[in-house]
Image 1 (cartoon, rainbow, N blue to C red):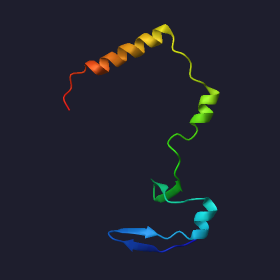
Image 2: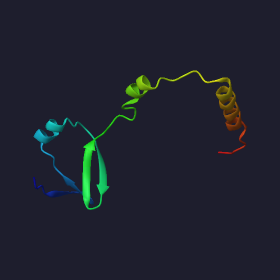
Image 3: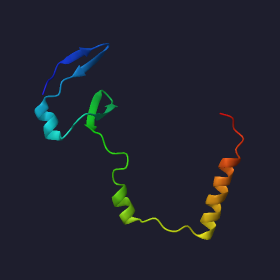
Image 4: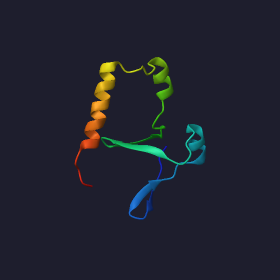
Length: 85
């Protein structure tokens, strides 16, 4: 489908017909990517998409004593940084 570029301020835009938006299930936003001389639009994904499945496949475990000691020492290091904001 060929579409015209429309002027929007200093930018250009494309009108996407409502039927196409409904077909792909888009609402208010999309991810835009430039690849070579192409512009790719895809639906926005939730930042945590797939986490449920990942946790089911590999559930969190209780840290070993060694891991817990390392976590606590790393936390102490963060609080001891003498950095002025």
